[in-house]
Structure formats: C-alpha cells, structure tokens
Length: 324
Image: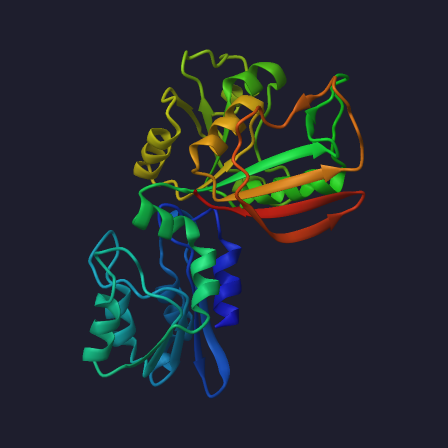
C-alpha cells in the first residue's frame, strides 16, 4: 500500500477533477503491475495496473488507495475491470465519498467473490486526496495559502528584492506543481506582472491553472499571464465573495487551490475561514516598518503547526487551519 500511496502523491495537481489514485498488483510477493491516475483523470490507476499485470493478475491481490469506481462514466467501471481480470483479493485504503461510488464499488467486488480488506493506511490516503474529499463533502476546493515573509512578518521589501532564498523559491515552485490551480489578486498582477507557473526543470508542464481575482476586469492584455495563456490557462475571477468563488472553482473541477497573493487577498481568505493550510516561508531578515505586512488586522489565529522544513538559510513552517 505504501507503494500505491507514493504513486498517488506523484500525480497530485494533474488529475483534477478526479482524485489521484495509486494501484499495485501483487502476486507471490512480487509487484506485477502498478498504475496511477493519468493526467486529466483518465485512465484510472486500477486499469493501468491491471493492464501491466495482464494475465498474471488472475488470483493476485490489488492494493488501491481509493475505492474502485462502480458507475459508468467516460470510462467503464474499475470494479468491473477488477472482476474480469480475476483478482482474488482487493485491499482498499479508503472509501470514495462520491455518492455514485461510496460503498458500491466494494459491494460489487464482494458480490463477485473477491475478498475485500478496507482501511489500510486510511488517513494517509485521505490526506493525499483532501482536495477531492473537500469538493465531495464541502463543495469547495482544499485551500492552501503561501506566505513568504521576513522575520518581522513583512512580505514586500521597499527595494523590491527577493525576501526568500533560492531553495525556498524552488520549494514554492514544487508546491505549484502539486496544486490544480493557483490564485492571486489583480493588485499583485499590476504590481509584479508574475507568471505564476512552475519553473522547476522537468516540471514545467505541471503548472497549475492561474486564477486572477479581478472584479473590475483590469487584467492587462500585455501581461505575462495573458501572453502565456495559450500554454497555461488563465481564469479571471470577477466574484469578490471568497465562498462563492471557491464554489465556482469546484464546479469547474478544481480540487486543490494554492493562494499566492498580496496583503489584501491573503487577509480576505483568512478572514473567510476557508483556508485549510498555510505554508509560511520565513527568511532570516528584518525589513522594518517600510515593508508591507503579510496581513492586515483582524486575521483569526487558529493555526496548528504540523511541520517545519529547513530551506537554509530560510525555514518553512506548515500550519493546519481550523474554523471557529
């Protein structure tokens, strides 16, 4: 199952609107097939793993990070493919919260005489697909806010220099590759003319959809965003209400949203209570009152630190956020 989980993590940010699922076929203690949900959500992990195992799949065990689908969509049900392949046992990390699937895939396998074992590494599997679970259960994407600041909490230097170092900026690009979409405000676009793409060597094609909160439709046609819109989509967002904007993104299939914004939009997201995680990059420098603070007043402090990553000379603190 750990191998299946690693496969699932590999394609985070690439499979929306579907979850990223890993599947491994094992026989006589050897892996004979493995698969992961492909870019755009199809083909599914199970069918890829079964195709790799071919005839050897008969009598084997399938490990899968999410319950196999049992409904006819753009592809045939994975549960049906598992039965046809002759799998003897299926180990499932967690059930699919989609009402079209929830429990039905497992029931179909059991009715066919396949032994099903559930809840193996369940929390790890749910963590990988928090975005998919969020859309199914809360009708909005999983939201992460990225902050890059000095020790005194300033996100902009009066001289316009980078605050964080190259290792921290590289990790920021890696985060972009793991999210379906990245959001910023029109103020940041007008001030900085950002690209908002993933520019790590070899991961350029994993750049997220770029969402621009632009209520008055001021996005310049000659901006870097618009000049590259044929390669990486740009979605202007006229909706000012954060909850409504997230619902609209979920309706378009976005399950994971990374927010990289200025003070105004970052504060609005935090005040909405709809941020799930904060990535806070801290640089060992003091900018002082001349710099711009990360947030304005009134930001709720309901954060629990879950990780700390050294990115010398900087540091990344990761927080989980909760509602009141």
